[in-house]
Image 1 (cartoon, rainbow, N blue to C red):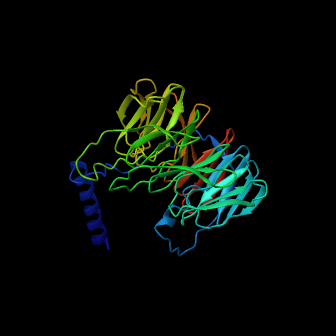
Image 2: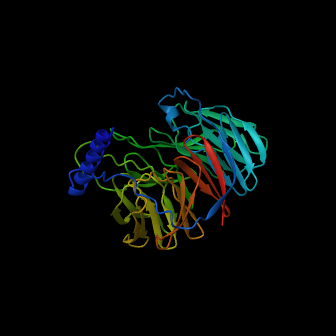
Image 3: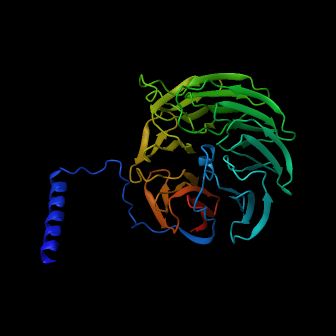
Amino acid sequence: MKIFAFIIFIFLSGCQTLGTLGFIEEDPRAPKKVDRSYPSFASERWSKIEYPPLINFKSEQDKYIGNHLLKIVNDQVFRLKDNSLIINNISNGRELSEFALESNTIVSGVSVGYQTFVYSNSEGDIYAHELSDGSIRWKKSLQDLVISEVLITSRSVFLQTSSDVLYSINLRDGEIEWTKSAQSPLLSIRGTATPYFYEGLIFSSFSNGRLAAIRSTDGIQLWEKPISILKGSTELEKLMDSDTTPIAFDESVYVANYNGSLTRFDIRSGEKVFSVDFSTSEDLIIYRDLIIGQSNDDEIIAFDAINGTKRWSNEKFMFRNLSSINLLNGKLYFGDLDGYLHEVDASTGEILGITRTSLGAINQVVLNDEFIAASDFSGKIKIFKIF
């Protein structure tokens, strides 16, 4: 026994020596270790646990189910459970309403607005319900997958399909008002973006790496421009999907794409003001004179909104599979693969706080002025009060 223990000791010592000498390389894409010395900034208020089945036979379309489980509107949490939409009071978890949905394979999440909630399923059906009593208002079968959230305005519903078709659908009767099709690339492995409404225009980015500005009332296209230039010759190198929802401020619209750039366009002419290297599939944030985004490697970077220069970057969360980043009162909030919630100063990129939760890998974080709602891949949902 002593001989065996001695052999194990020699083996472990040898491995340590090899690592010290550089013969065993560390994984450069290993998740950065979390610094837990920062103070907590939130306390748990209530939770819901929806356990998934032990055996789950999912189709290719169903892999998107669970991407958008949560939404906060004012002081209410909207959450999906099987084929129901449940509305809870955000402060105490009291159930306010439960509405039966027309499908249990919802892939777009539920969008809420103008006394309506809208969703799509894996069969390409779009449903609109009355928010007051949950009754169905209309159904439209597009026979095309919609995996990003639907945009609701006072007049229309705007959505983009996985085959790069943008639809404008009348909010009241479900009739198609106009469509816009983009030429899809030979290779596309990302998702789709949610359309963006600003000053009577719809801005939509497509899997071919282009941004279009379209009049919301009649579908007339004002311009369409590439977000970035091609950087290679193979189809994989040409992969430039834009899953990022455009954002606009004043006379500029900003958008980014995968394996591409963060680009600022003039809203009226479509002229490119600046374009800087930046690869992302997540949405951007505007804060004061900054455009903030997270790279595909989970580096958080703030760019100058005027000229595109880098103002700050934070590499301490790289490869931690971050959720989307949210902005509240000058602070950034997001979750990671180990169930931590993080708080970062939006002006400087400095870490302000960390809250440990009992969640697994966090896939969604949403918030309002007081509360954070977070979900993980197992179906757990927790609500936290911000200090």
